[in-house]
Length: 133
Image (cartoon, rainbow, N blue to C red; front, side, top):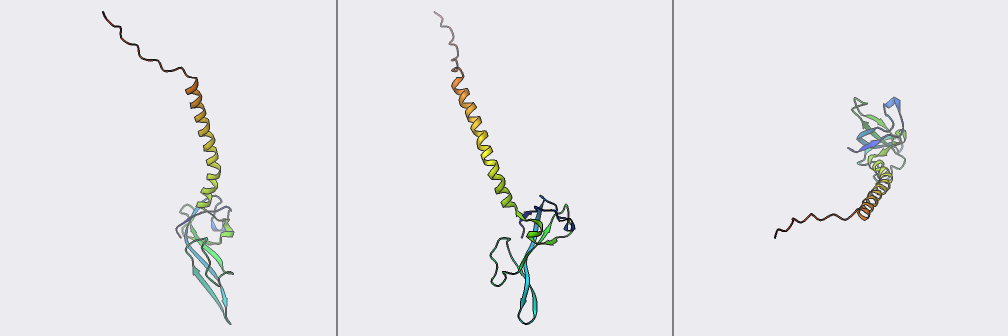
């Protein structure tokens, strides 16, 4: 709840757009218990990747997603429908690309600075005023 996720697939019927972020307003597991009669059970969960309560392995995880740009009220979907990626995972994937590139450019800057320091003439000392006799 309250986390931000990114859809990796378009789902026009739910107005879910690929590569757009959505606020998770609710998370729950839903499935059926069969003990002589069929009971549909909805169990709220706190996080997308939390451990499932015992006996809910066959339950389906549902999310209510909302984006003010695309929705007037939250829409209900499963992570598989939209190709769910958390914002944290998206940032970590971006860092895997950005950090080596940043390291390269910092190295280039240090090399240019070092080259300039080595090849530049030493600073000249200010001229001393003439001594009068």
